[in-house]
Structures are given as C-alpha cells and as structure tokens.
Length: 141
Image 1 (cartoon, rainbow, N blue to C red):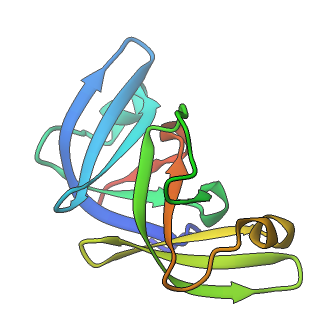
Image 2 (cartoon, rainbow, N blue to C red):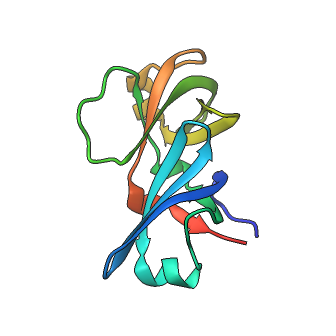
C-alpha cells in the first residue's frame, strides 16, 4: 500500500483498550518510542488488533506540531516525541523538518514558513514533536 502520509512507523501493539465507541492503541515503534492512537472500536475490530500484533502508525507531516525542547508546557497531545533536527528544507510556503526521535526513526513535520521563522529551529537543535492521538492512522498487512 502506498499513502501520502510521510511518516510510516511499523511496530507492535503493546496495549489495546476497547471502549464502547473508541479504542486506544499503544504501538511500540522502537525501543523507548511508543505512539498512542485513538481509533474507532469498529476499526480496531476490523483490523483484528491485539497485543503483540504488528501494525503501522501513519502520520501526515502537517499533523505534527513542533516546538523547541523545553519551551512547551502541559498540552493535551498524547504523543510528545523529543529529538534532534536533522533536516530543514525551506520552501516558499512551508518548511519541512526531519526530527530524529531515536531508534533509527525520523519524523517529518511540515509547518508554514511563518511558523518556521518564529521557531528558529535549525539542524542540530533539540525539538519536541506533538501529535494528537486521534490524528494517528493505524494500518495492518
């Protein structure tokens, strides 16, 4: 399957909590890197999700919010991934960042040019990526 989601992290379901409407999926994508996703219960059942099952987290680069490390307070975003900026590509409208979050994973974030100018994040800087759990799509083979 090919998708437009720039971030595709294969992992293993470590926990699955089923509610009457939604389900919470905790997907371990590398040692020390876990992504929380909220999907519908019907989707979890259709995907036959269970602890120990392989799955992939899909995250659109535009769903990622970036901040300098140490400059965020409390947020409602379940996923806070810290790392080092390893790539910055400035465009006319947007800037693309690559954030090394460990375990051989690089998270891609795309922010508006104005936001990038305000962030002042460059290669080598420490940053935090925030992604709300409902913005994570779960896929299985």
